[in-house]
Length: 354
Image 1 (cartoon, one colour):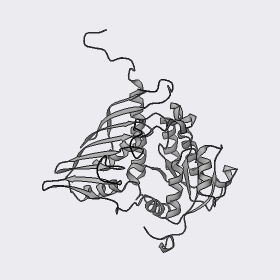
Image 2: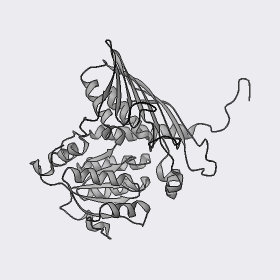
Image 3: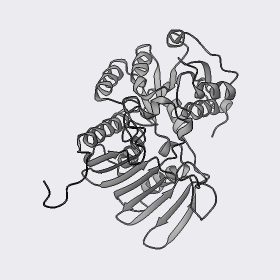
Image 4: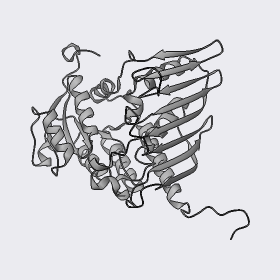
């Protein structure tokens, strides 16, 4: 990564608006790491993430009136990790004030929000970007992208994604257990999987074949969906993923995230955060082609999302992610969630039952 002073690009100035999820820490840290300047932050409550933010970034001023940041013409970007169902309104306000937007996932939670955000984005020409961290901030995923683009496994025809997460129930805020607030498990953490399917298969569009979402083990928190599954397909590929909140406490990290890519000439398996009972560290990639199987250490892969986003902001390009791709991920997530909600939730009928 370039040192902040080495780039000819002007300094990117941004504001952090909405600090309800701890992902804001990584967003701000990554922006500061590329030499961006945080003009200030706004939060409408005194949540735990707010306290953590102020401890980590004591140099960043808190602004009590959000309008001051939105109306500050020196600010080019708004970074946001607010309660998910409030993010769309914040994005619309920021874009109408001439600012680009980088959202924590999910960027929005309803079709009405998607339609409004798309309308305003097209009217203003601003960038609406969602930081899909399970691809953009995983070095093994970056290396896998390079290998796929180089033809290492031929054409990718199937993906299988596993996205387990640790619940950490005691530290979760009330909105985490309110489905209307977080949008459902397939909208929330499922969005990463839709992003990866489209990206690695080179698909512009896809169809949700079937989708389900459940509360399997938390009856005292009825608003929580703790497990979700999806099958999907495009014109050239198909895929499956499972997301859940069942990472055991014995695991040394928050989730054993994995992605398997099946190509016409080989396979890639990514073990993103841990190789269980195997090699130490994260970012493991296993490549099998016509000649051999090998483990590839991806620790030297370069993460470029934030640098690419800065380039896009100043050059009005779409190198970090196309706007079409971003909105398609949102659309597919919402479609899968709607399909899951339409499914009966009672016992499955046995053959011959009524």
